Length: 114
Image (cartoon, rainbow, N blue to C red):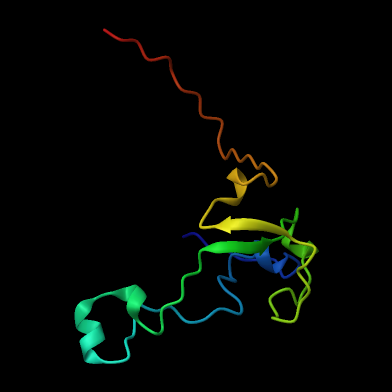
């Protein structure tokens, strides 16, 4: 039997018992339309409720989530000093801090071609 427990002193971002905070409930991917006729066309971008999220977003990389401001998610929070990142993108490939993770010491054998 495997029992996992989290130490109360662990920071919340490193606590496996906390899987989400301040997020909406899970939902299915759908698009509402103003009327049945619009829905029947299936033109998602024509819906008055469609909003494209592509573009420039503010981004602030920190070494640890403990360094974040507790109110950074609030609309009035000043992010003018943050970097900008193109969305959609990958922050590691956008000139941000290069991270490297290795979880095992796996060595690959040399492949010989017959």
